[in-house]
Length: 304
Image (cartoon, rainbow, N blue to C red; front, side, top):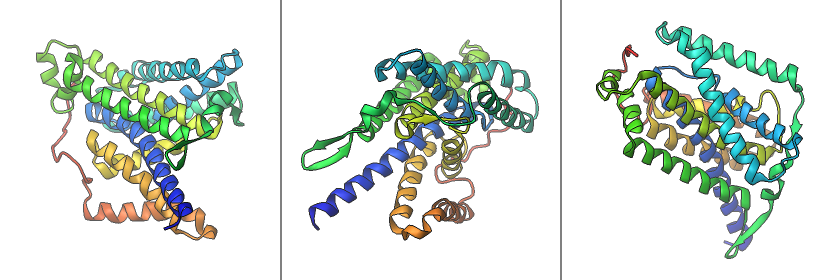
């Protein structure tokens, strides 16, 4: 195989890992909230969008350094996620699960329209991360600095979350809540604190994802978080709802599937990428409807 072929394969592998890492990060946030509240938060896309618009605001205020803009996005994601939990989801916590789902959809629509009315329906440029698009050389390979950073940051973020969930008291309480919420009360920790922390963590992960989506696209718009959340939702379905491991693994698999289909399809059929991917996923779910890594436990109606 010639050098050009190796470079192409390397680049496609990095593309798959970068997209997969992005899907995994968002899917992990969705799965974390679902595992505790039995709620699929379709307003998660607007948390990503809020982080994106926080970066746009930073640029308007003259903050051009990516090392200052990025923490603002992560903080915005966490704050908005907690705000959604407190204002929208806490009042309907004890209502039927369909109420929570409709609430999430309602929040999504309202926030999207607020961005459209208060900012613009058109994409707004966020040039803070333009310098990350340059190519660097690792040995004989030319690779994107953005992709290398994305893989490194996502690995550290997921590793840090694992350590938090396994080593901290609040993390252990979150893990206990995914199985039986009464255990949390026995630990002497309030349910509100556990749920708010889960939302904050999901917003933290959404903020990191927003940084790399903005860095890749260079702009933000009201639908900014929609497509990534759909992909992450699919990863949650494949992995098994409520399975954190499944969300990460299947997010990565979905990234490889997307890139593989694009690479194998003739250019004139490029628009069928998502259709083919979803058809393959549907076939997979016919074989294993509970997901690949489902814990196979009954979540039931948790008393929270």
